[in-house]
Image 1: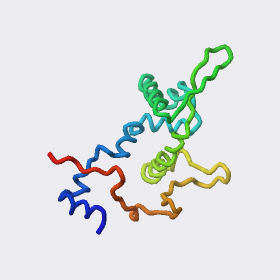
Image 2: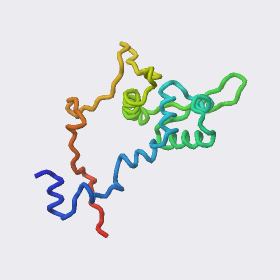
Image 3: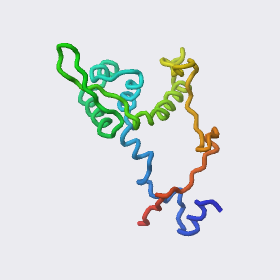
Image 4: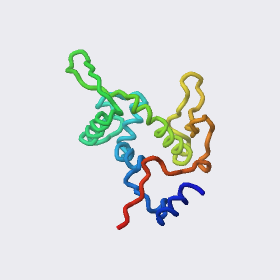
Length: 169
C-alpha cells in the first residue's frame, strides 16, 4: 500500500485533492520569483549586469517596478549590494548574486532550455548557454541524491514531513 492510499484509508479524504495546499514550497517560491521582471533581472545578473542603469537600459522595465524588484531580491538574500564609485561621481550600489541566488540557476536555466526548445525564434535561440571551460552546451538535468539521471515520468511524489490535510469545512 502506498502512502497516499494509507492516508485515504485513515482519514476517508483523498490526500491528493484534500491536502492543505497553503503549505507549498512552489507557491512560496513563486511569491518571490514568479513575476516576469524578477526572472529577467536574474537573467541579466547572470549575463553580467550589476547596475540599476544597466537593468533599466536592457530590460525597459519601469523604474519604480525595477527598484521594487531589486529591493525584494536583496531583502530575500538572492542579491546583495556592493558599493562602487566611478571617478567624479557619487557612490552607488551594484547588485551581485549570492549563494542563495546561485541556487536558482537550475530553475532559470530550465526555463531557458524549455524556451529554446519550444519558443525560440525560427532562426534559433538568441543566447546560448555554454560551459566556459570546454564550450559544450549546458543542459539542465534532474538527478536523484544517488546521482542517477531521472526522467519526469519516474518521479514519485509522496507525503513529506510537513504534509497536512485540509481542515474539513
